[in-house]
Image (cartoon, rainbow, N blue to C red; front, side, top):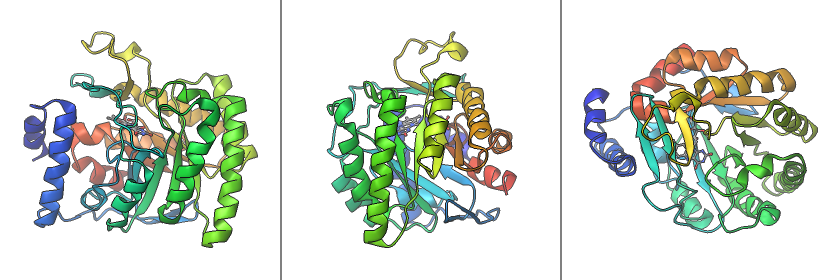
Length: 334
Ligand SMILES: Cc1cc2nc3c(=O)[nH]c(=O)nc-3n(C[C@H](O)[C@H](O)[C@H](O)COP(=O)(O)O)c2cc1C
């Protein structure tokens, strides 16, 4: 069935196809055409949260928390919405997303287009979802890097009462200098501030909301080692490995190879698994790893888990393979 839906959607540019598919999914859900038939779920408790299964939707597909209810019908155990920033912003000029059909990849340079945290919270309050809701936060494009902590704290405070967990995005390649927040000095300042805020909000709301840091696949081993050290030092709850890559080695022959942005999907798979493997060695099971990057088949999901991930997420695989992939992954990772 998804073959036909995909054929239709791929007639449009990726951004338009995205809007059509989200509206279509919402309608199909409203008329009761989609029921969650996922019979392969096995609940598991991770970071103190009960996940109905190990398979999640990665950030960026529902940037404004508008489609949580319909997306939940696809069988995800957790859904990560965002990236959301303190103020609304339009993102980069179009076109800003490219489909690499032969490579089963996507290049995007959206640049955190979103409605801002206040409208985002209004949207998510309307959602019905029994799984775990992750809220992915970032900084506005015009906030200088040395003031970035304030942007994260603003979103962290506003997201806290509604989030299952909060993901700290310091790894998108599409916001200038954002990835510098992974450097030793900047990351330490950020983690310290967030950990303190978590303690304050824990007292205020009488619940602990774990936070996880989303890392880039383009870090050197040395950088990864320093990141792992800081995650351990500040007892961060988890790490998401990985965001998209700026590496084009695996798609040199594609007509889109020279487009700026982050590459996702099959060409990212090995690179992200290597990051998971390395982090797992350093973190020694003390910190949860959420594996994401190029999961296109059930075997890809198993591979991430074998290398240290406790949970997995998909984005590009959903575009290329459809919602059957969610069920296949749940079955394979029970
Ligand atoms: C079109 C698009 C938009 C994305 N937007 C975000 C985002 O806003 N925040 C974020 O943390 N990751 C974002 N990502 C990265 C994904 O969450 C994921 O980490 C990455 O695509 C690798 O997974 P995949 O190969 O399954 O797509 C985006 C990815 C794509 C393809």
